[in-house]
Length: 417
Image (cartoon, rainbow, N blue to C red):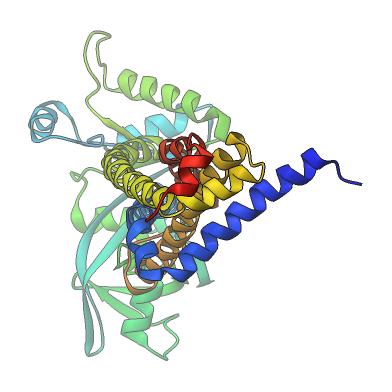
C-alpha cells in the first residue's frame, strides 16, 4: 500500500500537469500568444544548429575532402585578406614538377605523392558543346589519392604519361550532357580544341552548393605539359600512410620543400599548405559567429517568453485565489501550492518548447528539400531545447508560485474577482 506521503507527491505532480494542459487546451489563442516567445526561441535555436551542423558536415564531405589522409602543397595557402594576398604574390613561387619529384623521392611518411595541374576549357562532341569544363592533368597515382574514380573504363595510367597519350576519363555530368544515351568509351571528345579518346567515365560526385562536381576531364599530366608548356603552377597531393601520421607527414613535406628551395631558417615559407583541418577551422569560425549571434537572439526571445509566462501565471493566481483558499482550508500546504504553480509554469513552457521543435523540424525539412542549403538536426539539441524551455518556465514561475503559496486561506476565501 502506498504511503500518504507518496500518494500526495504523486498527485502533486499529476494534478497541476493536467490543469496546465487543460488551460492550454481551453484558451488556445491565449496559450499560443503566451508561448510565442518560447516557440520562436526554440525554433530559431534548432534551425540555426541544424544549419551549422549540416553545413559543417557538408563542407567536410564536399569541400575539405581531398581523399583519405590527403593534404595539398600549393603556391598559396588559404588566403583570408587582400593584404595577405598582395604579400604572398611577391614571395610565393609556383609549385613545379621539380618540387613534386623531390618531395616524391624523399618522403618517408607518404603512401602516395601525386601531382596535378588544370584549367577551365570548352568541350565538344559532334554538334554538342559544354562550357566550364575543368581539365585535371594528373599523375597516374592520383587515381589512388583523389575522389575521381572510374565507374566504367579506366583512369589515366603511367603508360599514358610516358607516351603523352591523348586520352581522358570524363566526369559523369560531361558524359551525360555530351553523349546522352551513347556509350562514350572509345569516342573522341574535343577539349580546348584538342581531340582526346575517352577511356573512362567517372563515378558521380554530385553537386556542391548547387554546382556540379562532375564536369571535368582527367588527362595525363605529361600530355597537358606537352600542349600548355611547363611554366604553370600545379599542386602536390600527399597521402599520409595513416590518419594519425598526417601532422608528421605535413612537417616532413614542409622540410623537404624548404630544403629543395634553399629557404633559410629565418625566412618564411614561399609555398602553401592546405589540409582539411585548416578549411574546417576557417569554416567553423564563420559558423561560430552565426551561432553566437543566434544565441543572443534566442536569449532575448526566451526572456520575453519567460516574462509573458510569469504575467500569465500572476493573472492565474488572481483568478484562482478562492480555489487556493479552498485547497489550503482542506489541508494543502504551502509546499503543495508552490509545487502546483511551478509545475504548471514548467509544463506550459515545455509545451512551447515542443511546439518550437516541431516548427523547427518542419522548417529544416523544407529548407533541405527545396534549396541546396544542407540541414542536419542533432537530436541532442532537441532535448537541450526542451529542457532549457522547461527551465525557463520553472525560473519565471517561481515568483507567481511563491505569491500563491503565501496567500492566507481566510483572505483567499473572501476574495472576489
